[in-house]
Image 1 (tube, rainbow, N blue to C red):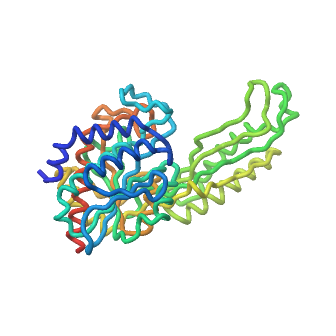
Image 2 (image 1 turned 120 degrees about the vertical axis):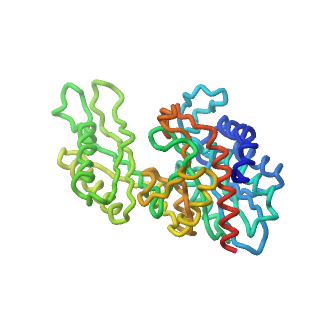
Length: 395
């Protein structure tokens, strides 16, 4: 058994305690002070100095001067959901760790402990990045702007998954090349002319117009991009009106565009705007399309050489046959690890934390999602094993 994995199994009760503490605090975006204080306190107990380079943006280092530096990253923000797991440690502040970021932070925290225990063996430095605001695509941008990558030679991260989105617990899947999609969020405001529900001919109904825009946008998927170049356009919000018998003046639709190919991305951005505006005009309304630059992110692209290099170090933790290196993207989800992978050779992996066949019915971003705690030991050991071996290989 790998030494880091054996040690992580010994530490599993402590890792679980840390995960549940962070879980109970919840918190969104940069509003993570209780979790930040907890992580800072635990790292200092381990003898690891921590600095805060922006609100709740924590950076720590282990190792020695003179070698290369690998960055290990964990996000730790929650989602704006009321938790429905029934856990006694559930957050009570209308946020929920339904994307597993509490697991990410706990795994990196205890990877830090194991690395600190063997600091004299490190052939360089390990930089720890505890990142807020991944869900809003702000944290990675802020931390890179504030110097988290200064002197960094490579980056590594992981994301757990459960339910339909994953293979069995404690298995790893990851990709050569593109692995998480680029994302752009949009808001479409339809301006009509409201009035009495009994007299629709005297109005311009923005709900009808908005509904046509949703349907027309599927043209992008069906007919306007090459079949082998992936694209997802999703509408997640449609708000309009306040009463059953009043046709409102406006409707607001929100959603995301996800792509791996820059040409398809630009096509989708241009054509969604044209479709929305043209559909509205045809129905005597007007449409404004806004793309939020703050929430936009590029595709995460794993470095092919690094992806192949780390494979045996991953399999050393999971066991033979439980690590898969893919030639296709691992997920259509987005990840602001793109700010790291755009700057230095990097790899992000997907760590299984409970499949449907294992009884984990609910997936990510569901307020009832739960994860297999065995993944905590796998994740902590994987972080440590990759860091140590990468530094040995890149003296």
